[in-house]
Structures are given as structure tokens and as C-alpha cells.
Length: 193
Image (cartoon, rainbow, N blue to C red; front, side):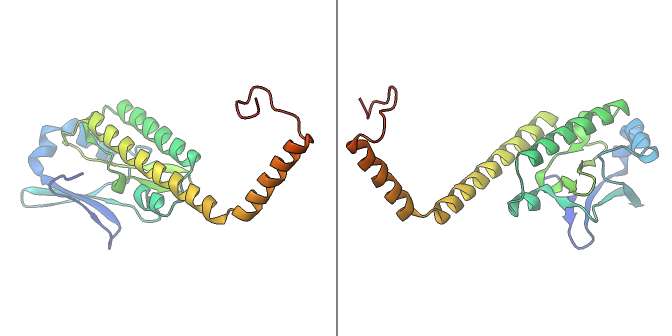
């Protein structure tokens, strides 16, 4: 997601968003909810002010980004299920704290997973005006692309490890048995009829 003032500080292991202080004043209820509550599924929020800017920091120590997890080809069906179930739960949790949907940051490089707790963590950006549907569509597109790449990698690995000579020998043996009448015809196969 290209959002002005938003970046991933990999050295300090934190997501950083700098925004005008007026943004907080415009959405005071959301800011109070984030500041005064620990909401399950959100990264912890630290902040400081400089002049007319507020800097929000979301540390992610001991967490791994979903993007790097997928790049290491560790994902499977249970991972995708965990990811989407956790996102749905945290959106429900956020709604119970009256947080508008447009504040969720669902950029794949800024969604993190806690392997120990089997939990997904995201940032919530107060005052953000993103359309949640667009973020979800983009997230699903990227995940589908990654899933296809994982599938192709798996198929290539299987192809690389299969012994073609043994497979060819087995097929020749089955064909010979078929012609000698040692194998019964299959039911309905166009090749055998």
C-alpha cells in the first residue's frame, strides 16, 4: 500500500505512520479507543508528537510478516485459514470498540503472524480513509498469486524427484499384462473399448 507517511522500519522492527495531529482531532473517539484499550489482533501502539505531526509506531518484535512467511514457502491451507479467520475476528473485535473499517491496514507486507500464539496482528491507522473492500480484494489477489506459486513449486519438486525410468517400466509391464489378458478391461474407458 502506498500511503504517504507510512513505512516499515526493518531496523527497529516497527511499522511507522506519520500524520497531521488534526487527523486525530477529527476522529477523537477512535483515537481514545485505541489509546485506552488493548484490542486483540492489533499491534501495540506507541506514539509521539513533533510540532504539528503525530508519529504512530507499531513494534512487531518476535513476529514475522505474512509476506516473508510466504516467500519462505512455509504456507499451507491451515495458514490461509488462520490468516482469514484471524482477520475476520479482529474486525469483529474492532467493531465492538466502534472502530471504523477504513482504519485497518491490510497490506500483506504489514500483516504479521505470531507463530507461538497462532495469531495474526495488524495495524490500525486512526483517521485513515482507505476502502476496506479494496484492501481485501488486493490481499486476496496477492495471496492467490502466492498460493499458485507455491503450487507450481510443489509440482516442480515432485517432477524433479520422480523417477521416470521406474514409471516407464511400470507402464510397459501393465501394457504387456493387458495384451496377454492378465489384466481385466476397465469399465467404460474409451482406450480399452
